[in-house]
Every structure is written in structure tokens, then in C-alpha cells.
Image 1 (cartoon, rainbow, N blue to C red):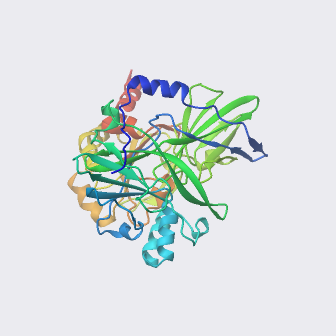
Image 2: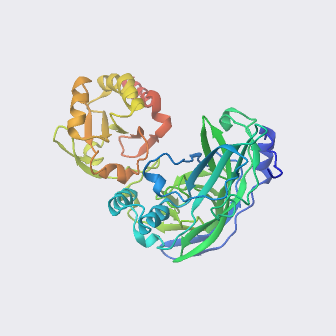
Image 3: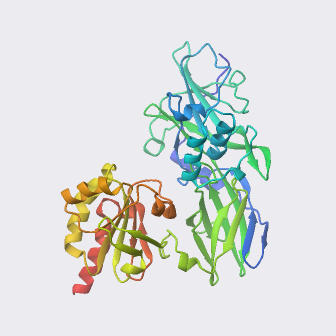
Length: 439
């Protein structure tokens, strides 16, 4: 066993020091046209930030994704109870190359690609090393170690093991052992395979290996004599699918969080924000139809859709319900928290306020026949729309978990969303409004 590097606890004071001195100011390189602001960004080792998601790594368990994960060599024979964990930096490329090598069949490949809204022009037919590999094992001294494929050669024989202990969730335990490590990986961008690097931290939680990408990209631009800074944070699948943008006017000022595809208002115009798959290019695209299209962000009208309800009625959303408060609920009969909130809060609040001034629109990830029995047995009176086959409405709203909630004002704008509406908190919005009107 090689010499190990010991991880040391990080205190809350240390965290504050990192936040104060560990972040560099963004660069100022951008181009502007009538309809597009294109901004260059730089990658930086990240300050500790709750905008970074924690991602559960996978092991080979005889399931579909085992075919996609690479074979790893060089596991030290001096370790017992070795476990290998995998995460991808580019899920689309990983699946595509598994299809090209014949380990995934065409049907499975196309099913996932259609669900992800992807196409093969984004991928290379050649192998791209886009995985993060972590291994854990027990040494002869009884100590647990972890090591990872830092140089991305799919071989662990040249890697340094690190001592570790099982830790509990970071935000509940200030003694969590936190040490980002630099790794090399490959990306396919601008029609070529390129090497890149990032910083990653690992920890075990409830027998799971968790991973955090400890990086962000940083950029700035000027609009109408005002300076803006942008920090872009990767999501579970990197910068491609749903990165987070933290935008502020000037440096060290209060920032506002946006997600890919949302709008930032600059002057009198709306610009839709996106980025290149490596986060090193930020794009602000002017959209004169932003208010007509809608968005899932607070202050904007929600995206429009037309659908058939479970009872067979047609609905134009949200125009057909204008003038009411609307709770838009994406849910499933297979989601226990969804069912709990329906029974504990929705039925009662709908009896009190449902009708002329308040409506619930439930978008269910189920087929009509499966929904009908649940609706009857629970005496649900509000609007239910089955969306379990095509998932067309869920795709518009980019739903990835249940329940997902939006509260829409009578004027037609989103006034609250997600966690601030969970556990019946939306009731306070309605009570405040209706009690005020009754006085």
C-alpha cells in the first residue's frame, strides 16, 4: 500500500474564509449583436456552495446501465471488499458510444435519446473518456481507503489511495471530510475530442458513494452602462442539461438564480440564457416573444399548453383559467409524497376556495385508466390531465421530480414554486388573499 494522504475536517469558519477569499472575479470578454450576447467564461475551482448538486454514483448490479460503464483495470489486490462506482460527465455521449460499439441495442438507445431530447450530431462516433471512476476498499490494517481514476486511463494501478471514514451528510455534520480532487476527462466539443479537467469531492452516505463537482465558470458583461457577473454551476449531468446561473449586477452584490432556458430582463428586452456544454460560453439570446412563450420562473407567465382532461374536456392553459389563482401540480399516483399532500391539503383547500377564484390543475404521470380509480376513491373534483404516455406537458416544463408545484396569480404570472409550496404552504397564499377580500 502506498503512502496515503489524510483528509482533515473543515470547519464552518474555514468555509466562510473560502467563500471570502477563494473566488476569483470573472473575466470581461464578450461580443454583442442585435439579438445575441456571447460571453466567454473561465472555469474555476469552486467555493463551497449549495448550488452544486450531490450526485449518487452507480455500481454494476446486473442492470441496463452496466453495459455503458467501462471496464477498469489495476485494482490493488491488497484491498478487500472493493467496490467500484461510476458517474458520467456526459451521459449522452456515454450512451451513444455504447450503442456504436454494439453493447446497447438501437431500440434502447433511441428510447433514451428521445426522452432526453437529444440527437447524434452532439456526439462523437469515437470513444470519449467521459466517466468518473471511484473505488473503495478495506486495507489489511482495517482502514477504509478510496481512490479514483485521476488521469482517466481506466486503470487504478497508478493512483494514490486516500484514508477515509464513513461520514454523514455534509450540511448536518460540520466535521464532514471534504477535499476536492482534480481529475482529467475528455469532452467532445466543436467536432473534436478534447481533454479537460475539473475538481470533484466524494463521500459515502448510507452505503452510497456521493459525488460533487466542485467547479463553476465565471464571466461578466456590460449592458446599458451596467456591469453584470455570471457564475454558472453544473447540474447532475454537467452544463448540458440544466445548469444554474447566478447573475448579479456588479461584483459582490446580491445575485438572482436562473436555470437554462429562463429569461433575464435587460433594459426593456428579455434574453434567454443558455451555455455551451462545457460552460465556457454563455449565450443571452434576445426573444421578443418571451412573455407569449412563458417560462417556469417566478414573475413570468407559465408556458402554454392545450390538453384533454381526464373527464374529456379541452383546456387551454393558462388563458382558459385567467382571473383565478391556479395551483399547477405535476404528480403521480406512484409518488407517496404527492398522495400525502393531496389527502392532507388539496381536498380541504379545494372545498374552501375551489371554483370561481381558485383552481388546481393536476398533471399526472399516469394513464387514464390508472388514474380513474384513484380519482373516484378520493372524490377529487379539480382538473386532472393524464400525461403518462407522451409526457408532452412534462417535457415543456422539464419536470424531473414529483411533486413539482407552481402557483399562478389571477394576472397570469408565477408567484411561487417548488419547495415554498410544499407541505401545504400554498394555503397561506390563498388564505391571505381571500381573507383580505372578505374584510
